[in-house]
Length: 227
Image 1 (cartoon, one colour):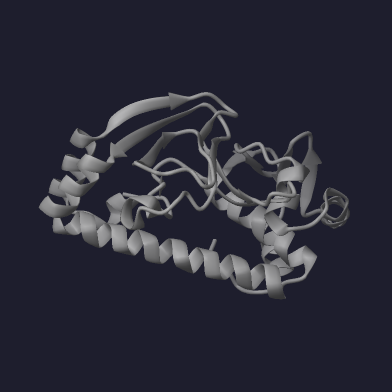
Image 2 (tube, helix red, strand yellow):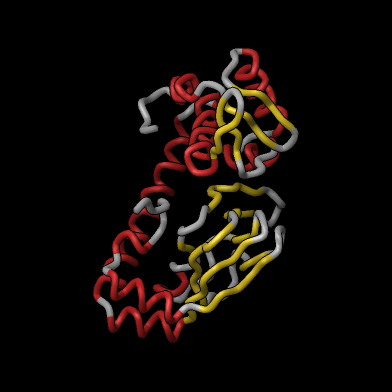
């Protein structure tokens, strides 16, 4: 079985996974609907069943960084369940989505009754921390081309679908969102994408990207990455 990057089920035994599913209840969100806001008090965690979720952080001056798009299987909203602190980011339905929801009482019950649930939570938090550290490293040390290429590569791995001439993202990824992901202006991102297009690596589509040359995108990142 193939698991998404932030799916707790990859670290849970069958009994704990079954108990999680029995304890969860389903909820739907329409595209663009906010699941929770940065700073909210959290009493629920989520596992994405279908669709994609946009995770972002913002400042009072309106500046925003998009740091992840979650795919089915990914779990989120967990940190507030552990430390009872405010939500560290905003979660928004990027498409119409379905989520499994675990409330606080069931979270405590699962943690107390199933050791592998608690172990999975620790591993999920550790993976999230590593992702945050990597994001900070990229933003601080990579040049603009490498940052844009890495975001394209990440999106292609999670959301790429076969298309004539390459991989098309099933996730709508406009240039404004890429700019928010790499901490740059839309105009700067457009210059990089136009260069990638001239080099034959991608085709820029309306609100989307068709990737022709994954190896070329990897080279633009500047390091060897798994396919």
